[in-house]
Length: 534
Ligand code: GLN
Image 1: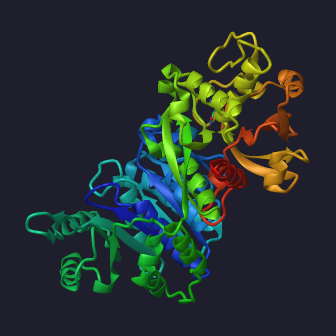
Image 2: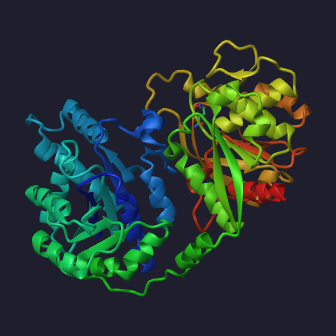
Image 3: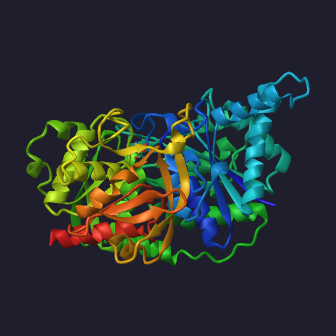
């Protein structure tokens, strides 16, 4: 039987609730407990798959093809566990499921209401995560801030869980803000007191407070918070601003948050193995060199739109002892830019990540051409692979109008085309080629040298594919198709052996990189970029 930790937020958003939830999970895992994580998002979209990345940030994809909030990426990177479709629940998913059941007649004539039907559905999702994951502890983060209209039904559902299961099986962590007032130069507890009162008005009694502040709160302040918020003083945890997010689990460990939780659960306090994490912190704090990697995309105004790509670059940097600095290149601006030499003057590697729609495409193609012609290490991800194919077809094979039917539906040389099984798709949401697919690697290729095995599993999120009609002509001009999905006969990886380091894949390797285990494609890309820097 799983135990449940819930993480709520108060005062303001953006306090690092996701990192708090992940850190707790990491600490429990480090003590030998199996953990699973889940995020509730109060928006009405069924999933973030249809949302604009500039508004919402990256869409993270699980191995089983669920399009999720980017927080799940933080979870996976922190706890190094693969999450699944039970890990990201939205209001849209909950309402859709309840309405489908109502239409099916499952409620046997009852009036369908927020309480109990919506709240039961939410509770079922929590318990489903516990039952199917086999975890000792499930950590659930509730998106939004206490007081939001949207998250009320989620808070009511977890209140019921607190009531049903009691404190031996549940633990509630409330993350709040302790602001610093300049002038009087002091930290203030009132917003936290008010936020806990709001939570208690909803019937939820927090077991611990995680207080975000610029520096540690004093013992007197903790005593005051404890008295006003009904939380034991030792359960008030400081969460100070840090330079390196990997410090956060260690900060919490020193304040014994995991021991407090395990004690309440009546679980044994086993020894924590955090050596690997401390080693990581040391590495990150002492990187010797720096290199610039240019990331060319159209969502560059919101860096969160590429969060997993950025993290993966950093992970590979840790292994090669370099700090990766990102040169954010807006592909739309690049379309009009003639001085590419100036744009890329300090760049040691170019990356073109995923994306949708025609805006900025020609700018990305220009960047790819620049990388290819100047022997700059290149890594293309999903759209970045499709555009590498277009660039090569146009500029090397002489197929001047080569394009993807995503951008030009009537072009004469559709080197990238809609997948056969996508042609009849009507709904936009959840209908891409999603999640894990197998890829077979060709021997004596860069891909094979990177992965060192024949078969790999990688996560996908795309609708278009390489058009196999063009394999021969591209091969004759020197492109190598080094990875294929044999079942559906789909190209998964392309590379240019004559180039210093030019490789691109149809899948998203960035979802599988970990701080202590960089992904092979990022690993070799940073290695090549570092060599190029020399
Ligand atoms: N837009 C392209 C497609 O749908 C690429 C998608 C992506 O980069 N994730 O196939």
